[in-house]
Length: 145
Image (cartoon, rainbow, N blue to C red; front, top):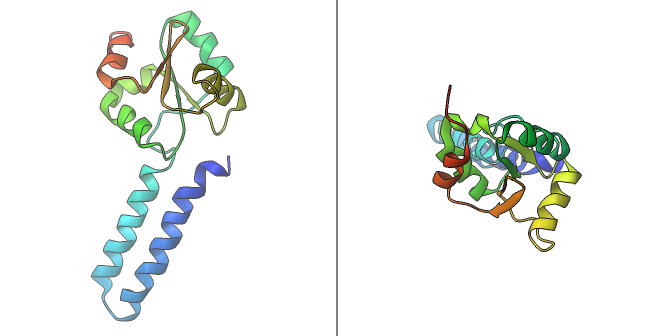
């Protein structure tokens, strides 16, 4: 869990240090912009933008019951962020597993990728798909109610 928040924390701390210089010189606008950019970068690299993660075993159980895909991801992954953003509101229909928080999820990704933790790995009907096209993943989701 600590690893999940390392990058966001570093972005905020570094942004605060960098913003201190202009702030001490009276450049409040510059300091505010620098701090805002660091907070935005922290947000992008955090788990905040993603649907709530569940464990890999629970995700597989739910997927077997409802047929929805399981998305293995990790914070800070730009490809995961791309998938999340391109799925939009329909991202909530998939089961999301943060491999940094769930050792079983990390093991499942390594098993599917020859020992590498390559994400996003999407499990559809028991078959892994590494970094699939977001449009294809959207097609695998059930129609909205």
